[in-house]
Length: 269
Ligand SMILES: Nc1ncnc2c1ncn2[C@@H]1O[C@H](COP(=O)(O)OP(=O)(O)O)[C@@H](O)[C@H]1O
Ligand SMILES: [Mg+2]
Image (cartoon, rainbow, N blue to C red; front, side, top):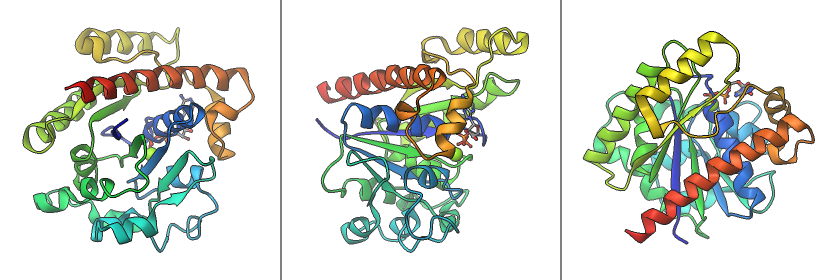
């Protein structure tokens, strides 16, 4: 099976990018897919959840992180940087660090934008799936992630600015697809933290479905405290022993099915 690369992005912070990346990673590990999680966010929440024991994670100053890979995307640097996670043998991590911020230019030269993509081609052994957690902006880091990706997973809450946020993120996907990465496609939009029976949220969800049709992915993710509990304990949601966690874990299984089907379509082309 060829490597499938998925980038998880949004314009805003706090909408659930890291949660969706971690949920998909949990589902992938649960079914035995060899997965690499790439943490492009200088806040490095994903790294702190899957590899809290790594040296330097506590103060954000890792010696080898994705920032060093973006300085020099060689096999040697990749070999030093990709690490085992605390989530078992199926998950490795390309850790984040605060220093990654220096690679977040608003308008970088296009050569720099390909560094992550070339680094990911050098991961050995090759993973089945690469999941990239992006920072909350459309600068160099997120553009690098799109140029490295086959599928873009957009995340939004069902709120007032969701429509414009999703539109702008979709435009960013189309721009990189046209200019740099012909295999890139939007997988769709994950609606996160949905609260049923809240009129405003029901209205926003209907609006998103009307505008984006089949791009709105099923299932919609509800607001569940199990997500925060599992993240706080640095445990995959598939291993968190509550009914709320099981519900969310099943939702991520379905989202992962959709992603892996997209991977199969791609390899038939
Ligand atoms: N569906 C959800 N239910 C409950 N809490 C959630 C949900 N999604 C995200 N959160 C919490 O909201 C906060 C922000 O989510 P996060 O995934 O870190 O967003 P982002 O990566 O987009 O900044 C985190 O504390 C996370 O645990
Ligand atoms: Mg995040």
